[in-house]
Length: 90
Image (cartoon, rainbow, N blue to C red):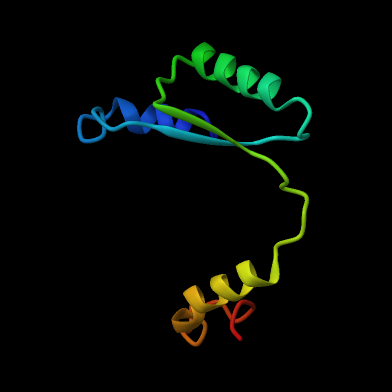
């Protein structure tokens, strides 16, 4: 479903001229090129045209303190708002 969604968006007239950038998670650092080729082959099998394919590695590492602080500053204004779901309220 994740790969079919960009295809569906790309076939609509409003989005037909847009470039598609694909981000994929890499399981290991050693086989980064092989995994990128594998994802590129999968995209071509689904006939999804893309402009850029970026492999994201080190996904299993914990975030750095600076990254967590930056994220917290980004969402600071939204934390006090009620979403209607009592489980997610702070």
